[in-house]
Amino acid sequence: MERWLLAVETNCNDPSREREYNNWYENIHLPDALEPHGILSGTWYKNINPGEGRGKYLALYEIETENIEQTMAAFWGNVGNLYERGRMTDLLEPVSITTYQQLKAIKKQDA
Image 1: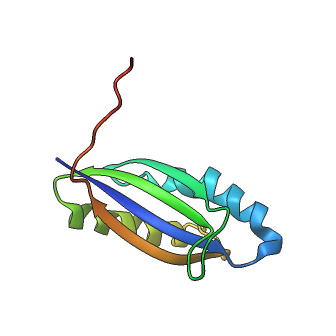
Image 2: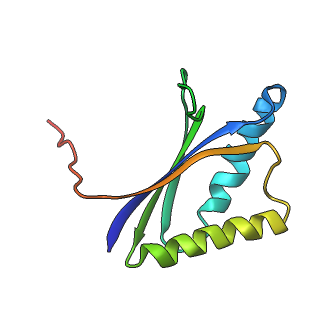
C-alpha cells in the first residue's frame, strides 16, 4: 500500500459568512470527505497570513491505497454525490488541489 496526501487550499467567498463556512467544513465536509475507501483522515488548518493567490484554509487528507487514480476517482465521485445530496456549500472557493505521494516517514521516539 502506498501513502498519499491530498492538499486542498480554499477560501470562503463571502467574508461575512466565514463562521458558517468553517462550521460547514469542520462538521459536515471533513466527515463526508472520508467516505471513500482509502481516505484515512482529514485535518483542517487556517493560514494566518496567506500570500497572494493562496488559500486562507488548508485541508489535508491522508490516503492509503494500492491505486491512487481509482481512489481519487472515488473521492471526486463522492464530492459530486455530496452536491447532489445538498451537502456542499456555495461559500467554497477552491484555490489549489494537489496530491503528494509519501516518500518517507519518520517518527520521533519518546526519550
